[in-house]
Image 1 (spheres, rainbow, N blue to C red):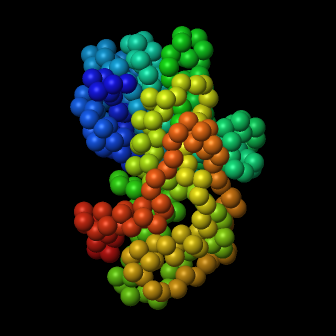
Image 2: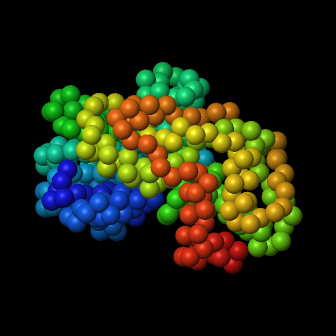
Length: 315
């Protein structure tokens, strides 16, 4: 990949795709192709093939996916499986038939077994049962990894797969029904502050440990991998820093200026006690996460204030 490469970012409106576009532009890449879903349905094989034949990208970042929280994954099982299988199959196959030089497929830490050894190494893939609440999404992402490997094996394609840990940052989803824990806590705690509530309920005991990575760090990792990595199988991308849900709530409270208390509803499930990625492989190649969780949360909240998103939570 060089400054003259024609780069297609699939999913450019999403949190990951938009971060990759920002990172490419800041690194001087100008020939970036994007296409809205309203004009290119990535589930349609003919449309995707025609797009690749016309545009002839040199490099592809495959960040497009149907995503959602636990409730959405449970309700729309067929859509999560079908849509994601079609999106990745169409793009990966069209990348092969149109001689794309390199493709990076973005997966998820949910591809690993529910009871994987901690921290989770790439070798844990397909060694146990998946978490049932997001199994269709995980199966689709595993299929994407295996597709990249199969095209590499059979046709010599330089297709790679990166598995990020829990992400946060610009363009995150703050819908309380479908969002993940960090954006949901930002919304709940900020709303409590504005409404003058003296306590916020948090599901579970607050003890589970989680790992978070700012999406801008992931974008840097994606460019790094494009230029420095070319192996089959998934490669993990994480911060390797753990924090309990209770501690996370306190960091967010400090950032928004909330001084109330947290009440932990232990009748609600905790989920997995610990979920930490082993990112030693990418670290050994020379990449490190740069944005601390505290600084990343402050920057995220500042951006939400500036664009009016925070204020919309209480109107």
